[in-house]
Amino acid sequence: MNVQRIGEPRLVEEAALAVTEHTRWVDDFPAAGVRFADLTPVFADGPSFAAIIEALASAAPDAELVAGIDARGFLLGGGIARSLGVGVLAVRKAGKLPPPVQTCEYSLEYGTASIEIPGDWMALRGRKVLVVDDVLATGGTLSATVELLERAGAEVIGIAVVTEIEALGGRSRLQKYPLTSLVRI
Image (cartoon, rainbow, N blue to C red; front, side):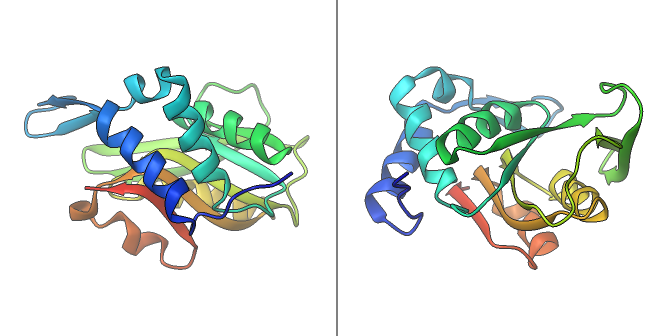
């Protein structure tokens, strides 16, 4: 499979342009003062979605598994895994998987949340994993996902997101890992 590298300007520019052109911005959602980047229109446009998938897949061409975070990360993770010819792992919100599960709780600005992966049956030890989500904000969900995967024995070889909200400083929580974001706001 010929996977283009993220450093190739044409690939990055095409994906970034698609995100910029098709993102729908919603003010005061989900709370007052928050400006929500709705990527649904970007994903609904076939050429835009394909450009994003290929750009993010090139972030870790040696990945053996792609971990997509609930819920938009599932869409990206499935496409990236298909592009790389590897499997995909759904990192779920708490209570969505039957036991046994492995769980990681993390802090949010308004409380706590938990994410989970399947427990006993999923052999992650030593596998190279690319972690994928739509947006990097404070980094809480991505950090918890990395912690959960590493506790299970996986080697996180990269993190890839469509959009990064730089003012919220999430990148600083993930300094140990190669991090690809197509658009920085």
